[in-house]
Length: 430
Image (cartoon, rainbow, N blue to C red; front, side):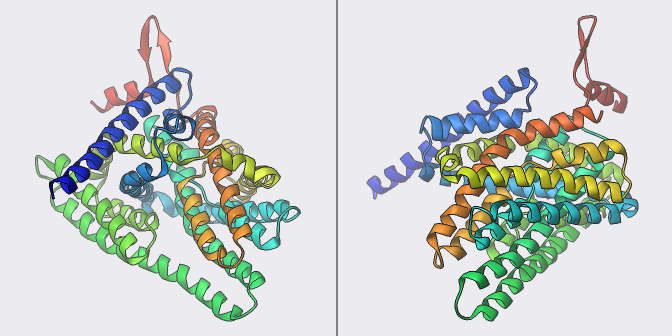
C-alpha cells in the first residue's frame, strides 16, 4: 500500500513540477517575443515546441495530464466570445455578421475541396474542406483582450469567430455524411441520416445546457450587483459557470465550445453595463496563467513529422484556406457594405486555426479509420500540419491586421516616458 501511494505521489509530483516548468518557459518565451513585437501567444507556442517535439522533455503521455487545463481554457475563451455577443450591439449588425460568416465559411470550404481534389480522393478532399472553415477563437481573443483592440474590425471579428464554429460543425457533419456515402457500400442512407442527426442533437444540447446555466448565472450576478465584494463574487460565479458548462457539455456529448459561449451570451444580455465591465476585468486578471499553459501545451503537442507527411496536400490546403478566408470575407463585407479597412483585414484576422480543427480531425479519423486507414491518416496529418503553420503565423497576422487598421495602438516613447493607449484609457477610467 505504501509503495502504491508512493508511486501515485511521485507521478503527481512530476505533473506539478512539469506544470511549473511549462509556466516558466511560456512566460520567458512570451516576454522575449513581445520584445521583438510578436504577440506573446506565439512565444507560448514556440516554448511548447521546445519542450515537446524539439527537446522531447514532455512526451505524449505526460501531456495528457494537462488535458483538463486545456478544456477549462477553451471554456473561458468561449465564454468570453459569448460575452461580446450583446444583442443591443448586434441588432444593427446581426444580418451582416451572419452573411459574412456563411460566405467566408462556404467559400473557404469550396476552394479547399477544389484545390485538394486534384491530388487526393474526393472523400478526403471533402473532409479537408469541412475542417478548413473552422477558426480558432483562442489566439484572436487573447490578442484583442491583451491589446484592448477597439473598433469596427474588432466588433466584426468577435461575432464572426463565435458563429464560425457553429457553421463549421454543421458543414463538417454534412460533408462527412457525403464522404461516408462515397466510401461505404452498404447502409448508406442509415449512415447519412445518423450523421445529420448527431450534429443537430449536439447543437441543441449545447444551446439548452448553456442557456440554462447562463440564465442562472446572469440572474445571480444581477442580485449581487450592489454588494461591496461583488468583484470577487462575480469571479466566483463566472468560474463556476465555465466549469459547469464545460464539464456538463463533455458529460452529455454537447459542444465544449458552443455551450459556454451560449452561457456567456445569456449572461452578458442579463446584466447591466457596470456589471459587465466589472465581470470582464475580473476575468482578465484571473485567466492569463491558464491561457499561458493552454498555448504552451498546444505547442508541445505539435509534431514536425506531420509537415513532411502532409506534403503537397498540406500546401494546397494552407493556400486554399488562406485564399478562401481572404476572398470570402472580402465578398461578404462588400455585399454588406462594411468600411474599407474591415473588408481589407477581416480575412487575415480569421486565419488562426487550432483546437476546433484538431477536434474535427480526430472525429474524422475515428469515423474513417475502419473504412480506409490511409485516408484517415492523410486527413489527420494534413490538419495537424496546417495547425502548426497557422498556430505560429496566425497570431502575428491578427495583431498586424488590428494594428494596421488603427484598432491597436503601438507603444510610443515620449521624452523618455512610455505612454500607451492602455495607460491613457486606464487613467481616464480613474
